[in-house]
Image (cartoon, rainbow, N blue to C red; front, top):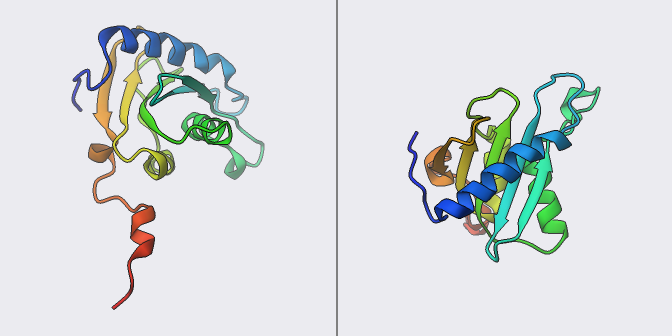
Length: 144
């Protein structure tokens, strides 16, 4: 993993770190006890929070990144430049495969900032985490 700052300034990363770590408190995780917070940064700088929401039927759980995307899209945001992710593990937590695919739908070039409890981070662009991805443009291909 790399640790470049990417397109965000040091101050923007500091704000994103604090908001992402705080978003863990929104988690409903009575089964796993694994709290995850995510904060999307829209193109206009708006921050949209999300947290994981578990269910006794484990397959019905939703990840923090998906919660943030759903909230953002249903309130009119569809362009994003970054997302922060933090968990109760105390170290860096990467988005799962499904979350990567959901992010790909709306932000194929998004930067993913994975924050540890102390605010340090690792940043990876989604393109590095999901190479050769499948997206909306692949649905327009006419079979031979």
